[in-house]
Image (cartoon, rainbow, N blue to C red):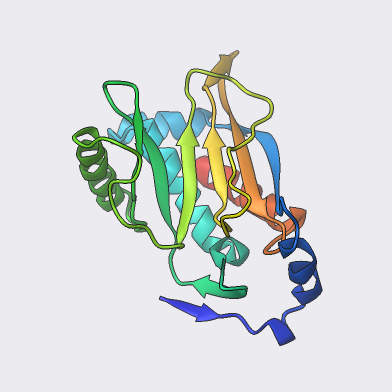
Length: 207
């Protein structure tokens, strides 16, 4: 479900109109996340670390309202729920776009992700199902520690979905960290909102 945001009463109307006309309206940051406690918790719960931090990502995304904004036909809509389309690697080293439906319960989410990963591994190609706009584009490159990140973009396609990516887990003196990249549409949010997301995500990883 979604509802239209009233642009005339939105305090960011001028910002939205300014940034949405740009050929590249996305901006991005790369930061480092402490995942020491999160990794230990995932192992104690018997949940894959990928599933664990994807779930924490969606918890934070759904809690920060601008991350639920999407542009449809030049209007801004607020979705009630945001899911994830994660890239899933197959045995032949190709990948497909998945749909991980959000739920607050970690065990339910684990079942959803396991079922979807198994489904993707039996398919070929990129698009194996229909998608709505209530998504984040999610990817992990666990083979590489990165300090910056970019995405392939079709500027003619009206995309407004946030893109969140994680790198290789590093360890030093018992502390585990990962690089996290976040790219968002500047017409829908600013650095302040990305900061809110990063801070909340780190809090959730430390619980």
